[in-house]
Image (cartoon, rainbow, N blue to C red; front, side, top):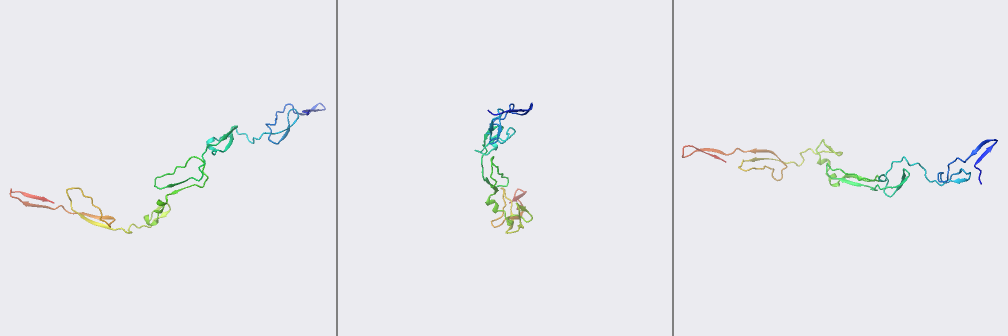
Length: 191
């Protein structure tokens, strides 16, 4: 039987009878005396009070475990690894999927669209995505000047093959003539 209370000269030097330490509350491997005075070795493997933890299962990687609020949680957050995506249109956006990303994923311009971003395709004085243009606007440009005579039906005037645009369209006067007729009046001829 162990001693749990020592009195010397009427003075209590040690009194373990009111102690509440038990092996399951004492850190694993640490020794102490319980209220009976017996030596006990701790068995508790908890290393933190998790009552104020805020983690949720969706915030812990899928399949991994953690403790929060005194409960063991198994994660449900998807592991997306190296997420990658491309953008091929001006107003297109890439939506990053919910979950863990390992930091090595990339989102960039579609290679076909990227190859179009050359200085020769961008007007001089304009910079698009870091590419400064050098096109003056006159390279390989052929303008055409045309004449058109009005007709009774609608006409669409476009440049002939080999021309890029119309620099001028001249609408000719509508042919008009008057001549006396046998009834004593004039005949008007249009067109």
